[in-house]
Amino acid sequence: MSGRTDDLAQTAPKPSWKAFWERSGWWKAVVLVVAYYVLYQLGGLLFLPF
Image 1 (tube, rainbow, N blue to C red):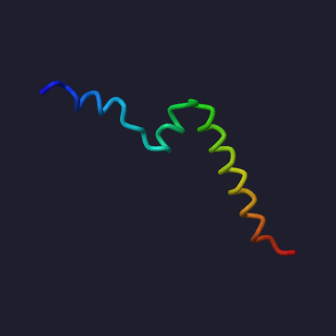
Image 2: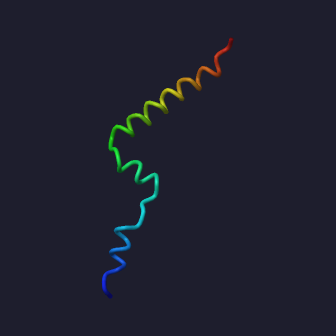
């Protein structure tokens, strides 16, 4: 074989979620955690009596 499968594997597009995480780094994980926490806290307000 001429090694073309290796060339194709290196040039194959990555899944969008993997490219999203590899492109930026740790700060996107922090933003995701903070957004989840805020939504979780706001969700608790739905059960408060008015």
